[in-house]
Image: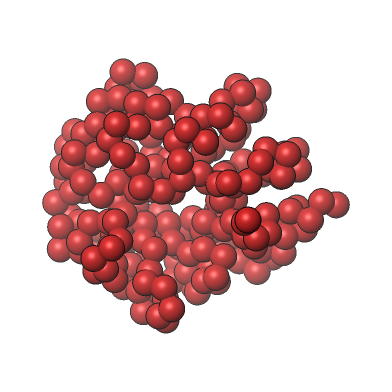
Length: 210
């Protein structure tokens, strides 16, 4: 059994179906990813549009079960390309980006599933919308016809993530969402404890990036 499959099975056993695992394949070559695809894993994450197009266009034509998740910052000038290749976008944080995604997805008659990214630690250098503005962006996104399914966050580094995950879970529930995107290789178990339904795991599956 390939090491990536063993790693995936180990993570699955720990979270016990509490969340969908997005295998974050950014920067890894396709030969590193193929064993997981052949095993039957369907959800993969990328953070750069061009890399996703180059790696996944042909595979998605062959395998319609593959779901690709955009987990990085998405610039508006890349949206028309992103909408073609991605099924989920986890990083919507402005009305301008929401409108652009809607316009481009309407052209393709494609329904993209959307997470609103929240800057839960209120960090100046981090992307994501401020907590106080979340409901306004959600209302706008739904009004124009986007399929908003939940919130997403990346908590501050080197600080106990649990307090942020707990806050995100409460915020998500108060807004009436069932889906919640939070947790990475270092903190996915804490995230699932606070009802994350999508965890974004790269190095724990594929190994270290170089």
